[in-house]
Image 1 (cartoon, rainbow, N blue to C red):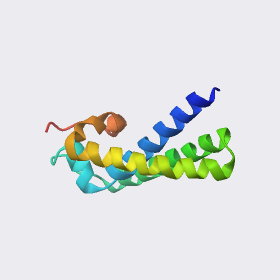
Image 2 (spheres, rainbow, N blue to C red):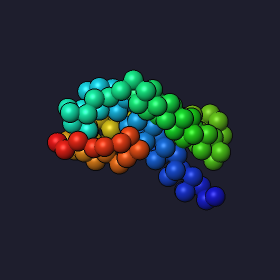
Image 3 (tube, one colour):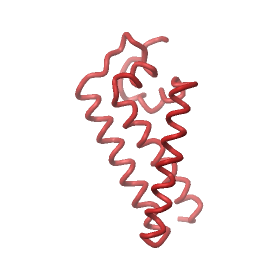
Image 4 (tube, helix red, strand yellow):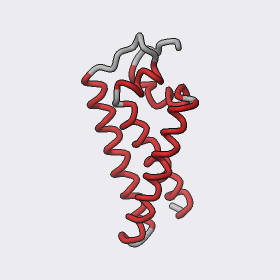
Length: 110
């Protein structure tokens, strides 16, 4: 796989993982799904597992391209950038994260 594609997949996995971790919190869940759709404990646990797996996958993708010391640095930078992107998205356009919850059942109207 070309390095550029691997980096792109790693960045996408990093951002998606951080978004899933954020959506496992009641406040962010309600921002995206609406107040009529409560976050269940099983869904929160599933979101946390998905987020953790996505972050580990992103680290593995970075390591597959670079030396581990450089890969870990790039991974931490991707976490910082992804956290900012998720925070800004939740602030201004939280509904953009709805596709990440398509598996979670019905969607409330906001």
